Image (cartoon, rainbow, N blue to C red; front, side):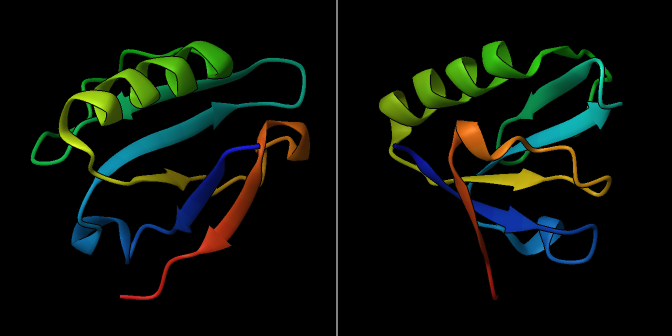
Length: 86
């Protein structure tokens, strides 16, 4: 099972990798992949698709992936979130 770092709005800016930003509600959780050095474009997709896309990007450059989930919507079945401490 994949392990991801968890960041918040404060630590996300300092994270040395890519972000999956989680939005939505309990019925429809979506995400957006924000590659390192880019800003959010507001283009969401189903959370599983965002994770898949982030892992593809990671394959190309080997940078880590963090999840920014301010609403606490990340389902445990998708992997453990470990707090990233800068």
